[in-house]
Length: 314
Image (cartoon, rainbow, N blue to C red; front, side, top):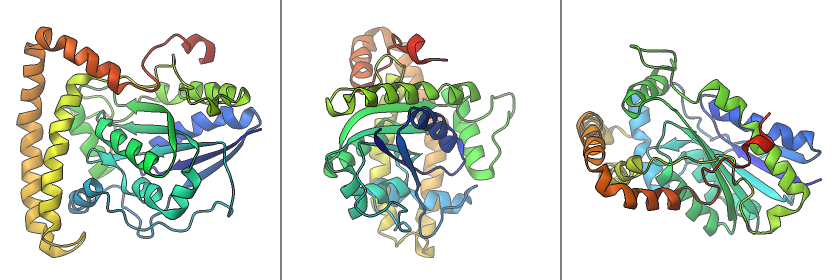
């Protein structure tokens, strides 16, 4: 029997459903699993009022997380594996997960431990995962695997369906576009990762330093989106510093700057992102070698290969 800590934060419940599918086989195999749901001292709303949503951007990007309520983990408890299930906010880890990773208790729990990260989002998680990797290293943890679940809708459609879900709570079909979020069949299939981890734990593979979830299509990277995402991350870095100069989160002095940023964000989504994707498509023959290298790099450590799917799918 191994002890597994699962740290989760999900506003919509989608990530919690995926996490439940993953940890079910771990428990069935006799492992002791502690599920810790992060609770900010001041809860974040869902659906988000638009002003509160935009007002969270500067602190997300600058990793200035608000405090959490005390964790429900018994003192001095030690774990063999840590799984971090997190959301992506503004190309960064959601603030509750950032708060956990920067907390003294979070760093104690991760220090020297193998870590698996799990994310469910629209489709842009690369910058957030780079930040997660850095925070895990700073806490003394060792990233073993990463699992990414994304909305399979067209990227331009998800620019409409995902904000609609976030701001209204409605995720059903809209104007001919598919429902927002990860498809139900993909959520159900998340159990394959739990079975593979249970198998790996039974063999002590968490101590080897190698990935445990290869061959299970854990991550699939669209390198064209990665290029757009990196440009957006740089822009968010500039805007976050500018807005914070006007005051703290929730203060009215920030609202004029937030309004300007909102206009910029909408303009970027409607013009810059489609133009960037079009140019990358037009020049794809020339960009292919670079994009292939970028995909291979970003899909580490778990990869998009499928050679173990038959073994762990049910």
